[in-house]
Length: 184
View 1 (cartoon, helix red, strand yellow):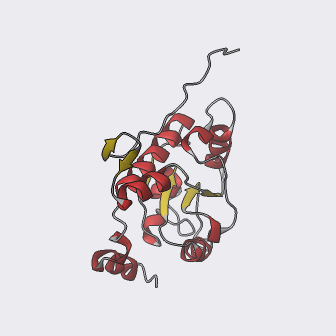
View 2: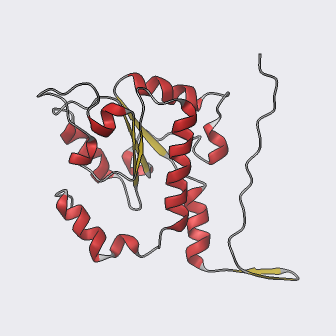
């Protein structure tokens, strides 16, 4: 039995000006810090990668120290779509619909070889990577990936959320990206 106490993660204050009794920084940095440390994942698990995600949610790996302890099973309340496992082509429209129902800002994490590239299932019925239907922000490879890899992927999403401009989602480049996936 492992008796080590897990390390407690502290949130660093954003860059700013400090003085006696005050702290000033930009709104963009505060919003980024809040977004990064309060991600609500929506797990879309279809196979064995879902079991690894369950292990990541357990007490040994403790994903809650990253502010993601509340998995949301409603797309309207989630901001991180975690697609795990094999996605059949018949399932692709549902994954896309779930993505479209999520409010901005939203991020996507593809977990496992099947979600990233179709895995070993090179057949007519399996989608060869979810990036064919929705934009993916972070790929976590493996078959299935270990919980440490999932946590690393979550930390990469946190970096994206922390450093993303508030106006990026309104940029013409982002709109063009959504249009290339036929997402309104």
